[in-house]
Image (cartoon, rainbow, N blue to C red; front, side, top):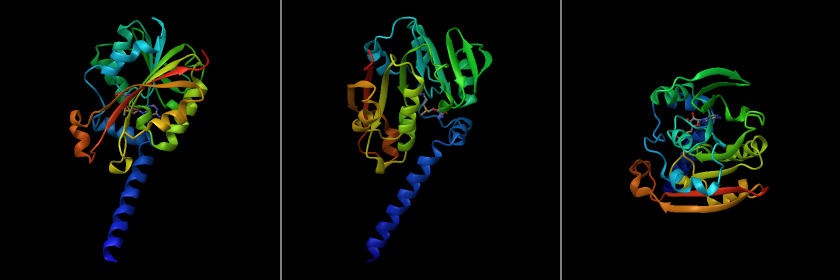
Length: 245
Ligand SMILES: C[S@@+](CC[C@H](N)C(=O)[O-])C[C@H]1O[C@@H](n2cnc3c(N)ncnc32)[C@H](O)[C@@H]1O
């Protein structure tokens, strides 16, 4: 049946494309090339509205250090600093790290710290290197975590590894504000990847009490995702409160 054969070929091609992208997105070169080509549609000029609306719900003490995994050159780091926190990001792209400090008129001190190059100015530090090389010593002082476009930047197998490595290196008392997206994964290849609520529970229930604080269809405000083939796109915000407390 030619129709069926054609259908299955299209399906196979789509599975292969998704598969390739899944693996490319954890290859550091994938991200290095995106930064080199300035293909950084994820970067926001504005401070994230959910950070402003929900950060207080984590009750991170003023002055407490906030960890921002896969931080890019996010301006949210500035907001956290302005709210009294010392900020520690990790980012694999030297371009992102350089641009963060240059665009914010900051001159960082650069030192070597383990597998990382540490760039620091005015209580804002970014470890330039691979998240998966972080150690508990490097994150010892962390009191809270802000994860926007970080978990969802990773394909499924790597999200399990990411949550496992986070649990291994973060202090038990640090809660997380997590922003995710949900959409039919077969309609678009990530990143950003769809991360459904059941997966958030599977990844984090053991260590945290997971509460969904916000859920909204945001497709109308994000035409670039409609152009990529989506007909539904929900953004969710979670508080991950440590069970250890
Ligand atoms: C989708 S972007 C999000 C950036 C930032 N969270 C934001 O909200 O703008 C993901 C970032 O993670 C960085 N990245 C990817 N894999 C990484 C890794 N293994 N270690 C550190 N950074 C990584 C990429 O270079 C990219 O800047």
